[in-house]
Length: 283
Length: 283
Image (cartoon, rainbow over all chains, first blue to last red; front, side, top):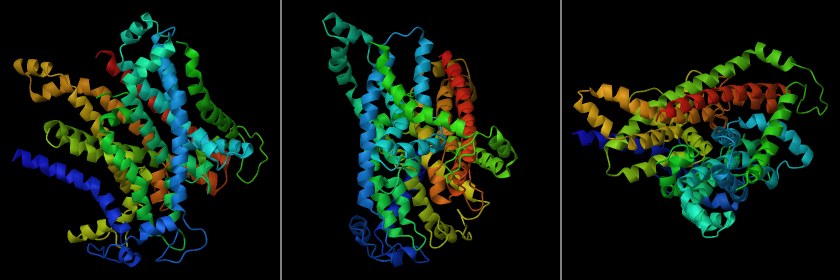
């Protein structure tokens, strides 16, 4: 009886979590009349027209004005921006994280304060930064450019990479590195030969999670991005128009944009709690 | 190991974060408008207006209401899920994989999924409630319920975050003190009060701190579902900043609001970091 209650609760939670995704998926394989019927349809003839339209730009069931949502472009933009931002954040963040755990500081608290300073870059509300940045970018010609977005995404990437990798480097006993130093390794050598191989699982997870965070971010792309650099998050709104809402294609776009994250979620289980708390909670 | 290796990881966020924000603070003392490039210094005028502006105070109130409601739901459901997880080892892997999904998918996409389901014309939620004899509810269009609806969407996305952190904590609880307490005749309430709670407190604080930061600066889910409406019923401070900047073009005034939002988040995180340090100091 006790177990029945547990399983009932589990089942309920799983249903609540999965239902929106399954429902959105069902909308993505419905025709426009089926979606907009006043009573939701559970039995219908599935169609792949929405997915085809997503990639060919045909709007099919509704008539739309000139500027059509260009989903393949949003998807590519997302990969370029998130990929570029992740690469840069890893390049700058990993050495910094390592130095934060191993370099000598005057006091322990000055080390902690520096780490918290880096974390605090992530605390700021996006618009407080991006409104003045909008003006700066306008002058510098960085509005609606990949470089401009990759740079501002460092406010998400660097704090995350530094804190995450720091927590993995702290797990590695200093004595191993000291032993390698005695055997004649330089600091750089012991970092590349000892520390990196030992932390590679954590570092890979950090890279994937940084990519996801950038992929999911919205406000920066909304303000300093534009038509040319629009990623999937701001792009998903372009299916909503004054003339008509492309429900079917929007659902298809949501599913395609969410899929990479859903797949990664399953593989990143082991790292996710640590990741979401910036390494402050270990399992 | 040289400390200067940390420098690039601090310089880039300073360049795209701290300097723009500092410049923004300066701009909040000017009459900067979107359409008008000429800027002159007007002192504290924007802030004086802010304190007399009813809409501004309404937005602050909405922010606090949203945060309070969302975090209460998430803590309650999160601890329930965490304790369910500890009691059942079978199927734990599957269950965890499922509850991680909302955390990796972009919040804006999840919000759009709910928007599709909560629609008043043929939305599936009202359809199901109809079976229970409940009249259709305008979830996102009724000013009395819209903010609550948004808090529940927030809970859908972030309850797993709280649950996973608390679960990690429950997993790491030592067994010995409980056995000792049992031998000494402590009641279950006593062992919760004197063993579980002190050990879990840092994790509760960490999860609440992250949730406070994220939900105070929440923007994307509200922007995509209600856009701050109906009226101003769901315009939180972050959205208020956006609307003032880009709908009314009053960049300097919006920036003044953004500075206040930043101060609120800064103050809250400082308090929580201090509480967290105290809570972990004797473990």
